[in-house]
Length: 179
Image (cartoon, rainbow, N blue to C red; front, side, top):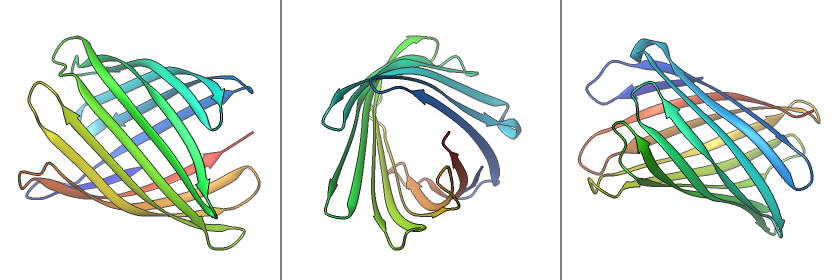
């Protein structure tokens, strides 16, 4: 669940359901975003292929209720520097129909374990739309709490900006379940 508070606008909630299944080399997932108050839905099915060394290729579709449909491709890269784990997810989105504008989406998370059960992290997201030359970024700290070997809960408080005076703050609460 995301609680979003735009500057000068009404607050609203959105809900994300992300599933990912993988074997040693291949994976498939679907990321779904639902925002009932905005009558908005986005579905992103994708496939991954691990090529070793913490690197995976990722590609898929991004389809939404506004008609902004994309094909996307990029990489996932996971590494560590001492106890700090780093995850990098850059992708290029190319419009295939509707109102789309090709863009780059980059996500980085650096996390550090405080205890066996508690980790802290910092997320940075940066998007750039090529045709309009628009930019957007989000930054924020994350706290993870490991309930069991298969269940982790987390919370992220973040601030975003479009670099032109617009932005919002948000709180994300989440659950990760591995089986």
